[in-house]
Image 1 (cartoon, rainbow, N blue to C red):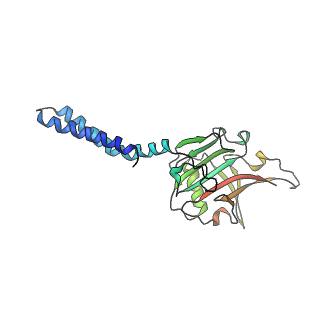
Image 2: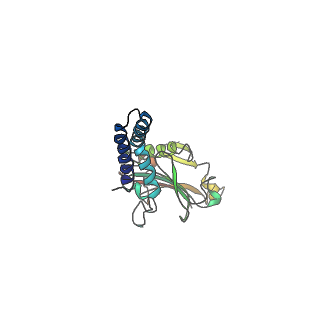
Image 3: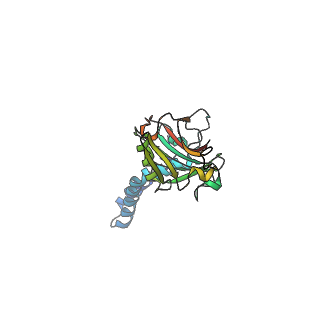
Length: 214
């Protein structure tokens, strides 16, 4: 049982007790109104309180072989998109102190300062079948914190920048093309053999974007 449930039930019981006790007191409208308001308020806000409590008490998955490794355990069985930057110097402002975790509604509720990359993950999504649809939902949920620019080619979509960061901001790109960098797509920790537009998702998929060099 969630540890918040006994807390909420206690408040409900107290409110009911106050209301019942005031029945024997004539003209005690204020006390009855307060008790009724307290009960209604708790019932209405319980879902939000429960969500916030789950965020506060969530822990990071510590099983290395799990695609959700390093992600909050409240996202188990749900879909996530991560955006990784190689170093604090090549990270967007506000995302250079570790890996931030944004819930599906855009709430930044946990930062892992020990993660070996900076950036953020947006998770808690459900029922997405296509990678591009999930990506767009993650970008929209965070208010364009991870705004993407891209180029459409015959072979698919190429990501040019995320949060204003291009691959050549992180690694040196030679003018003759002998060396360079690109946004690499991973699905459940493995290099994706298809582009984001053609990526079929699992119910607990973790889609990751990171900069790779060549």
